Length: 471
Figure 1 (cartoon, rainbow, N blue to C red):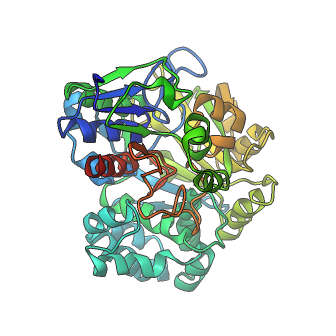
Figure 2 (cartoon, rainbow, N blue to C red; figure 1 turned 90 degrees about the vertical axis):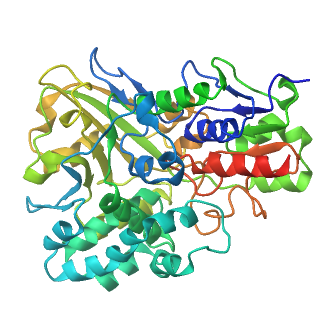
């Protein structure tokens, strides 16, 4: 007999969430991780110079505080401390001003002039009902338990971002703010359902903020690992799983992997029809990332940007829509929509005294080999003249580097697959229960299942619930 009831392969947020969910029910759980440390997308390292601590992938975590799974854990007991930036998000414009998302809905709306009232009408009901919406939206497709709350989201969420922004808002400021939120979808903003991402991230900004973890995203992974081992779970690192045959018998095996790795690990045991569906799974666009060691804070022209944890660089709805559109045609944008975070402004553990870190990425075609360093730095310089003079060192990651770092990032896709209308709720294949496979004791718990990418743990939670109900 096996020493363990369940084996979880992969220690990203969803693998850890699956392990915790099973261990809380008294299961004996073994978690296997190929790398030296747990974390997946939640790791922090000195990528540039000694003393400068950079988040390798995830950096800002609205869903870290907003997901029902994370809310069910007391991670502060295991060292996790959330920091709220003065301003969750700023979006600079070419005239030297900026529009900001404040945690206060009223303060945000006050900047938007004639669009302020509409902004409040759009977000106030969602903020009020977030706790109900979260349990529906962050899970598989099913009959809603709170249909009225979901209707408030769903009637707008299905829209393309460009259409919704132009229909609801008259000012470029409001359109740009919403488009920047929606561009986290990493899809063309003319596509249906992209508005859902803008609505979700805006709602979270007003409900829980856009916090960052003290010490880096590795702190989240370490807290989850501490919680898991405190329940009796066992973690083994430096252990790559290449085949199901390598694993000891267990009641359930949960794989924090995407379809491509599932085929490699278990393809010879899967029915041919299911294999073909996995082979047809569509991965999304990739990202190109830059980390900087800086001699001083980024010198933004707009003062509110100097108080923001996250800064979106794209100026107008039209510019961002073009940037996101061309990458799906295999091209890169001359002015890419760029996401910047500046954790060291609020967390003094990230850099030596009076020095700072910068974190940024832009979207590129899947598997792109184009070096976007100059384009990203030009975007920052555009809104922060003199930025290049503050750079002490830089570290870049191409789509290939990201996949080497985390095999789940196929072609640099950090969301585990395109989150379009075909794959948002039917990922990885159309199936009554997306976490199950044709193998009765094998389950998928990665972001290639609903609700998709992000540090929220909900994919792992739902997969573990499926295992508890079926084995």
